[in-house]
Image (tube, rainbow, N blue to C red):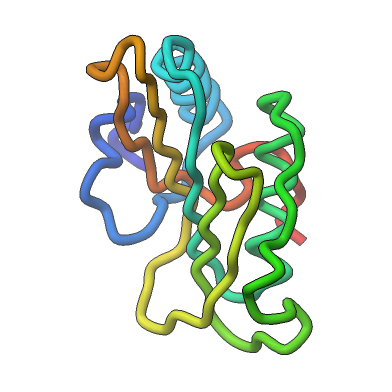
Length: 138
């Protein structure tokens, strides 16, 4: 962004993740790590143009943050049958994720931290670009 987006708070309320330079991503990545540190577990929301893109963003996030991989919830629809824009909801507490068709959303990652010990540490961060955690643009 031309004005130099370097604050997680500046993302709050955006419909879609803005394009970010490498230095902006670095600054936001550091802020995110600090913000996430007191949290015990996380949920993730991924607004993406396809189920494959949503799962790729989830897997990149898991790998970058050292999370155990979430499993597809067996009660959900098979990923191969989902076409078009989607919303993925992942939950570390139950170890699963679901993907549903969802038109009209923006695009990006939303991460929410949760803590029973320090509830004030909980917050939602994003939307961050789908490629924020290092997978290629395609």
